[in-house]
Length: 221
Image (cartoon, rainbow, N blue to C red; front, side, top):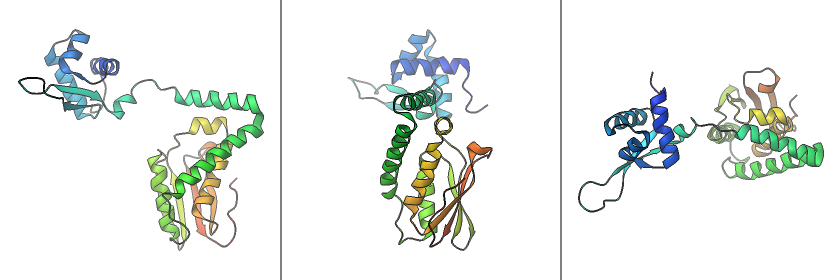
């Protein structure tokens, strides 16, 4: 099956994880395998996007050595406890400064998001469609798999099919409140925003209805 990491291939990935970029011979020596066997594994891993090869700097005569390194996809195969760490940090902040202090931390993060988003999302002079699609592209870059679906004249649905911070949002629901506030501040006061689906409220995704309006946006339930 393409993309499947077998036990033998995993040993090769682990060897590169330990050594950093290395030649096939170096990996073979570390695993006590033949160069031919390791090269076969590396070629298959390269085809599946787990490793990448490059030619090094020549030393003396002959072709420069070919080195192999892990890609971002390969790094995702190794344990990553950042979600648990985030939850522990949220709990520690709550214990140290209370709910009000935690809210201030979340709001400070929201302020930083707004500042960063303003650099990539057009202002109120742009159409709602332009602003919404720019926001969706930005959120997709952050791992939310966002898209904009047209619902009618000046009405759109901003859909996020993935939540890369779901564990943190579960531990601190104020994060979801703050993200809605970020959308409102970035899209502008002429946009009314209603959350119509919420992943943490038995939804399968998060979705927001965006409409042009002179009224202030309403806080989603």
